[in-house]
Amino acid sequence: MPSPLTVNAERLWQQLEELAQITDPDAPWTRRAFTQRYLEGRAWLRERMHEAGMTTRLDDAGNLIGTLPGSEPALAPLATGSHIDTVPSGGRYDGVLGVLAGLEAVRSLQEAGIRLRHSLEVIDFLSEEPSEYGVSCIGSRAMVGKLSPAMLDFEEPGGERLFDAIRRMGGVPEALSQPLRQPGALAAFIELHIEQGRVLESRQLPIGVVSDIVGIHRYDIVVSGQADHAGTTPMELRRDALAEASGLIKTVQQEARRQAEGSAYLVATVGRLTVSPNASNAIPERVEMVLEVRSNDAALLEGFFPPLLDAAQRQAEDTGVSIAATSLSEGLPTQCADEVQAQIAAAADSLGLSALTMPSGAGHDAVYMAMLAPTGMLFVPCLDGRSHCPQESITRQQAADGCHVLAETLRRLDRG
Ligand SMILES: [Zn+2]
Image (tube, rainbow, N blue to C red; front, top):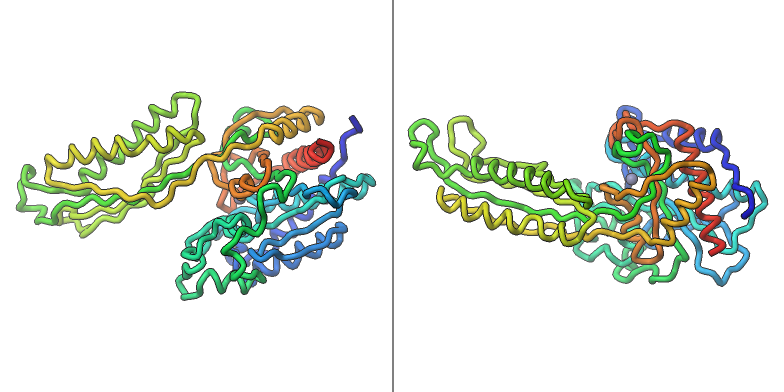
């Protein structure tokens, strides 16, 4: 085994700082996809890719792809990457670390005079974060043909369609009715990301090897009762939608806690509630809420809500309240490829970095890339697990460790 590659921790850190400066000045750190600021960020990134010896192109989905040619052009490329868009007032590392660590890996390979057999792509996926158009992971979805015509028709509040916005970013939306790439088009995909949770930090571990990425089911739940005077309607005559809704929310929480005691990962959240008439002197007539269930176990995920809904519906009947639910989305868990997990673990081990195998509770572009190629993810810790906020923080060492394992994993996958 050749000696491990050296990555330049200082240079990686400087690049992270530099890209962070391309932010809406009044709301650091904000670089929303589809804005002028985002295009500025991309222009900066494209220059850095050229400096590193890569060719660049935009694919029809508006993904920015830098390529370092390999010595055996017939081989499918290896790919890494993430996203440089942020949520409003987000962090400096979510997504950005994965892209800039890929760039640093390329520079390190070049400086060490190592030519990979496979070409290596560093991909900045278009709009991973939820956009004003109501869709997330736009670029990675589109790459695998999962951005539907209905989604392309979604409009942002100003009335622009996603279709037109993709064109504005340099994509070719007409081409997106087909997958841009077929399974096998990449030899492997690997994404480095901050954990966005507290597991690694609490165990003082530098590296997480992601075993699987949770699937997410979302339900729209409508609880219907009757609005009556809150002063004159006796308790036994009330059809209080909010009282029934709150019972269901509590049951969801208790049941999720119970099921999460096993080895599988499961979380369930009601994070959004609309009550009407929403007046202090009126009995609530209607509650609309969104339940989100996440798990890395498909059976647990699918089996979680239906029995709770059944029970709640039966119980509500006694009080003259009805409960209806419709499914909003049904994403399944994504398994990370065993061989990629094994290479990440071996790479970490060769660098003397302890690693923990763990699921990802957040969605990522890797979910879609797993439809194309053996896919893996690795995590580094972030301070207090905080993310999607300006306080999001990692250390120079944590960034360098992640980058080092990423580069070493790519080198190992190249030999395989
Ligand atoms: Zn991210």
